[in-house]
View 1 (spheres, rainbow, N blue to C red):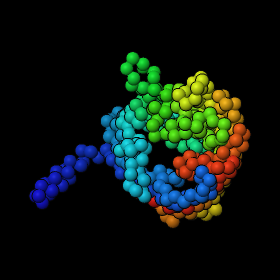
View 2: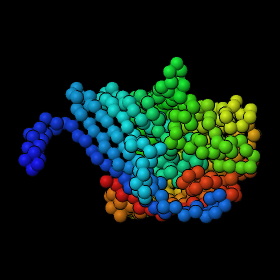
View 3: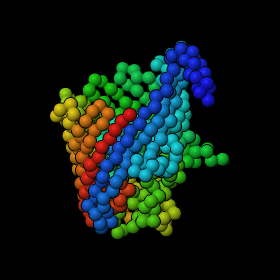
View 4: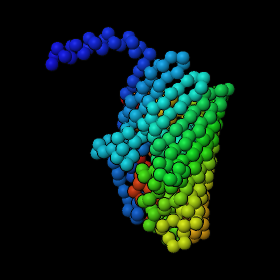
Length: 383
């Protein structure tokens, strides 16, 4: 056995120079903390939760130089719960990302696999949750700006950056025989970077999203769709026929400060299909308006504040819910790879007996009232 290991080591040593232009990187994040919700279904709730500031993960990514400025690339990324060791993203082994492709500095990047959509790539960096995690999402991550789901079966193209501009387009195959477009997704976006300024915009359209994105937030509230007794943002969406999202935003760095603003509009057509009589032709839409800022008082200490206003309409019931949400964040870096943090969220809901629901699942369930408060203390380590 020892002789075999020595022979393998010697062979690897002689082979290594032939692969000098190639690399494989192993990496990961572990985020763990305690989350408190003052009203989850009428009761206070304490939870030990993994992956709120950033999803707990480990992954590997690699590059192979093919010559002529072209490289082969791949990335496999696993999500997991640090408190019980279970797989995340619906139990997928590489549920966060799994793709392979080619990249060229002059021609751009083409990848195939399970990937983030254009809204996540282009608009998420302009949101507070894009900076500091899922608890600060637009109510229940209604627009997927916090990547509550990824897209399977995708072909994605990202252009090279020219004068600060970058474009992206993607298509996800539905894989249904005889119905090419069924359960498919189309998305595209643009971004512009000029020194401290970043601007991004994107379009996203998916057919049968609750079927495509079974690790998302669509089916949990389906029995209460359209009810008049009040529910959180996703409570108005059962198994929609389609989901369309348009979003744009920007951020600007000014010394130790960073400011951002974003807007998203998400529409679910046939939102009540199969849930309520006569509901198959109705739609639900939401607008999310967000402003936020953060300031690093020292190289180790950053404080952040954000505000989100969400309004919408359920065409079936005529209900027009509104959500006001205030987000607070404090982060202290113990080292380059380890930080501790405290975060807090307050949400107030109004309109049509709407009830507060910061993030169904993260905060347990919707509040029994129009107000909900969540707070979390945690630690994150990157490796």
